Length: 388
Ligand code: SF4
Image 1 (cartoon, rainbow, N blue to C red):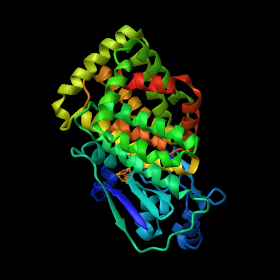
Image 2: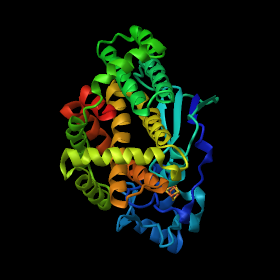
Image 3: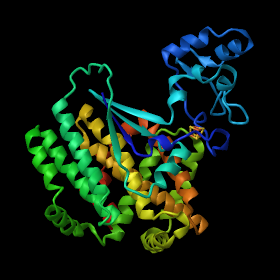
Image 4: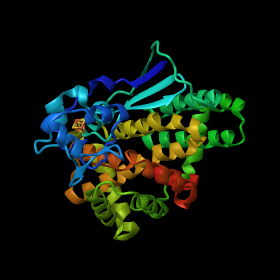
């Protein structure tokens, strides 16, 4: 079995009661069957409490005020305190570690939804390297796994991550080139021209094609008024999704008002000021450009290869591009409100976005559906959002 991890993977350790958020609030935590059985067998006072606080039919912990029944006032887990780490369910033991599974391959990552992970990812100054290790482990059989397609998608992902990390180019230009690659790749997936994919991917690695792309993409620059209309619609996607935390949706509405209520001229003026502020913002301790690179790379690494299951590489890349775009808008709104934007603000914004979007299958699926249907997510429109 081949395991892949980002180079910061082992830096994570839970900061428990020091955490400004907690993974036990807001989500319904599902309990694996083995642990559920162990919980049924716990005896005594705590056993009673445990059994009364589980929805056995659903296989999840009950919640009070959107907090797990076992999360105490000090933000400690009562199961951990009373019974020890071995009695935690799989979800609690593994979070924020995340795994995507493919035939013979496991991609491990850390979830941006944990604020400590967000700090690690967004403060990573160097290009993230992905380390692989072969371990002897019996591979589970994946029925109907299209290994040929997986290989092509995996090569394309490597090429896209390489492009996103090409620091000679503006970060949004890198994202636009990557987006174009995914678009071309999708055409080949649709027509099942798998054997032409290598040539196509290799073309995107050459300087001549990159230069040609940069020239072609100039068409989508300097369209700020049009961009205003598009990004406003792209942002309102958030209002069509399942809400996990009420506070998040209220803040998103306030940010929407803050950004767009005074029309395009005001928005453009503020955006220019915001971008100039971020370019000079040394308090971040890292360039804003690098933070954006890490976001694009994070979403690409985590989701792109999943296209082997639904043949929607383009949809996966839309998620990887639109997510950082919306996070950038939320950052601008926070800056407009406070007249400053700290690294802690960006961590706060990014991890909350991730909590709402990445931890709801309903939201991930709904987004992909809307990406395919709504005009504001068409190829040219996304390019204008990235480049203007
Ligand atoms: S969100 Fe992350 S840092 Fe906070 S309690 Fe959970 S795992 Fe620990």
